[in-house]
Amino acid sequence: DAMVIQNPRYQVTQFGKPVTLSCSQTLNHNVMYWYQQKSSQAPKLLFHYYDKDFNNEADTPDNFQSRRPNTSFCFLDIRSPGLGDAAMYLCATSRSSGGRLETQYFGPGTRLLVL
Amino acid sequence: RKEVEQDPGPFNVPEGATVAFNCTYSNSASQSFFWYRQDCRKEPKLLMSVYSSGNEDGRFTAQLNRASQYISLLIRDSKLSDSATYLCVVNRGGYQKVTFGIGTKLQVIP
Image 1 (tube, one colour):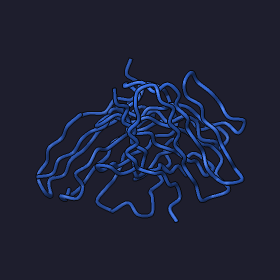
Image 2 (cartoon, rainbow over the protein chains, first blue to last red):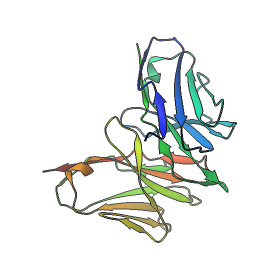
Image 3 (cartoon, rainbow over the protein chains, first blue to last red):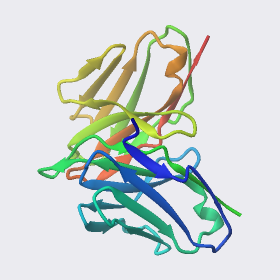
Image 4 (cartoon, rainbow over the protein chains, first blue to last red):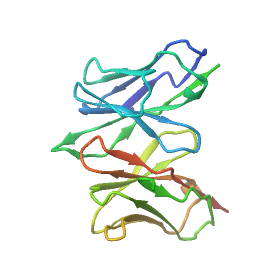
């Protein structure tokens, strides 16, 4: 049973055309993350939510925004995709208690192609 | 110095061999450690957490050396299905301070 679901699995967009990637989870985890992973590179954390609290990584471009309307859903908005934004975007969830990281569960990812 | 460093490989080993990977971390305050496996064009999946006392899961053994600031993963009796990239993950404390290594690519050959 899928626990972290990402849609779409593949997304093609045009240079500068806004795109939204979605993530949903059935684990009821309080923390949700968005990572960007380019070929042969480590997943790079863009931002995360602890409940409704949004936490941006310092080097995440302003072009990337996120929304978490409820516990189950989280969205990644790329306002003006550039060619350099082509990557796999991974959503992950975890349960955090007492400030300690529990295991992260990843969705299958959305592969973004920018033309 | 990178926060988490791994040899990207590839490590090409014959079936049945034993192979070990190391991952070094720079922050001595790091608290928890994990090994994830990532198949080509797929998402990372947890292989095992790494405990201070070391832990074993079947053919896989993970160890932590705090003094030298590295974790290791040992795979015994390698199978073709073990071919993947193995990502080291370090948590510096709290749910948000998570850093991935670049991963070590393992190719098990018949």
